[in-house]
Length: 442
Image (tube, rainbow, N blue to C red; front, side):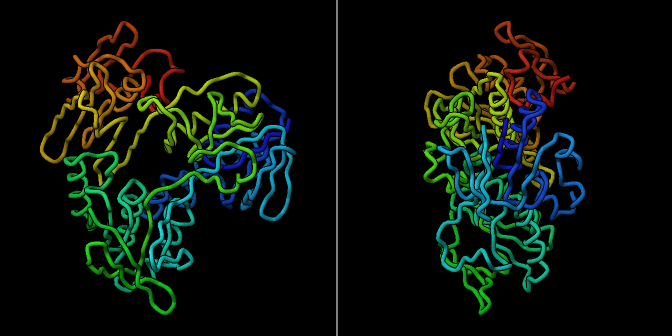
């Protein structure tokens, strides 16, 4: 059996490992447009901060590919997929045939049309890959005024800003929404986060964005014009608005795409023997109860495992996922789970706040917990995420949840929960719990 995997990150490698678990002899080829072995993408800002290095950013052992008998084609880009003839074509015109194909190419940065932006400039770019971090590192050394502009105040923008600040740059985040992390945080938690950024040399220009980048004769930025009319000095400009599914190379393949790749519960596309997972797919959102793009690592890993298991001939289903974000900003931990800014009047919000260091918010739909914001004190995040995923009725425990002081009790005689401060988690059906909660098990 010839397995071909497009993508060398979380979903692709989870797929490969699942295949190898059940098929010890099949030929597995992993293709990546990057020249690196697998690295932890969330750590690229830590690389700039000196918290990780060229030796520690990798999340697989040096002999990982060889030990599992994986063939690798790194630095190769897939330009087309011919599902009729079961082959793919690379950017050097090489064709590779497959019996079963997994597509996990991730996302590509969304760059809106901004007058003056040029990704080829050594002082402009995006921030999703290891090479982007290295480019920023080189650019900071050339910066005359040590001023950087980051367009976008989401997770990518905040981590890019932290990385640039570690390179001795003064940073301004331009965010069109009223607050940073605007889709996940509310007004209070967004304000606390902005203050933490401001205290550490990162300004936040919310309800504003960049409309034009002024450049010098070499095409490098000198300043930016803001929607508000302000002009800010800029040596470096990073666009970090978000990512979109990387599906352009699938044009003409016959694979159904609606924003992202459409898959069924086995992670198979509409084409037999072609599977997909990760940031490029549309899958079931268990809270919004509809197909959605949820680009987070734990779900990419789970989708890859489900796909690989089915590709190896063992039936398994993917039941869906939900939004979850986890980030730490200058020592301030932030976790958001599920629906954090409800619009439905039937949903109820409960808040516990201790100054500007701790903020915990729970969102209930009737008796069912559907969302949470945990800032400063993230105790029980794994437990709460599991409860939200399971749709358990637990309104009577809201006070314990709010204070992060959950003691042993039983919900509907199904799941038993132990004291969070002891480090325990839910006891139940292991396979039904989301991947991101499993690390809390003992």
